[in-house]
Image (cartoon, rainbow, N blue to C red; front, side):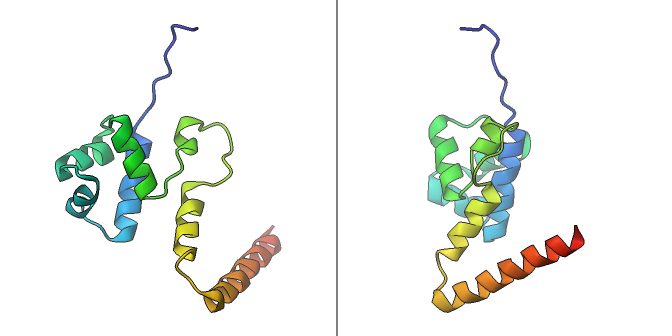
Length: 117
């Protein structure tokens, strides 16, 4: 086993948590109540790259549907990005009529993208 250790930069992960939290319209206080953490600790994770415990890491990543692959394996293409997982979570709350609208929107976006290329 190599003595060289991979240093993980938690800044990007902290920023992803902050972005997801703000997208939900949650304060640090609200988030802290859900995961039983002090708002100041959440601020340190978000803004200073504070290294959370494994338990806190998992709690926050699952709470906000953030893919850890993009942080652990930044050079490989993950199957579902954080944004995709968050979109999937939003879609879960829709009904069949909403899916029809979303499908048409996705098709139109793909066609517009092809036209630009």
